Length: 119
Image (cartoon, rainbow, N blue to C red; front, side, top):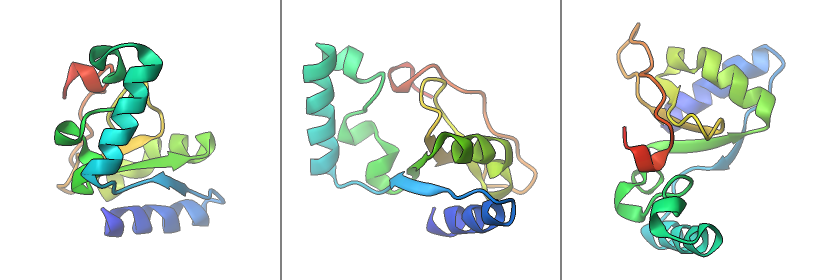
């Protein structure tokens, strides 16, 4: 992930786009805390999972996900990230990217609605 995002950031910079890393690797404890906060906010584990997954289901805990900003950089990454193996995964999270296209020339899979809908 680090190599892919570094290469993408360099290419984006050449296009005048700055990709900020908002969040990347998270410990299981941090992910659990975020999930617990989302349960409080959304009222249930099922509703929370549309925005934050529990540690055993989050790619952030494995180091396989990155959240980026601002919006313009996320849009650049959505368009160009496949060149680096990076794909947007969830329709409801424009900022969340995972290594989903590891083979050169492979396309990104279709977006899933949210974390609760799997993928």
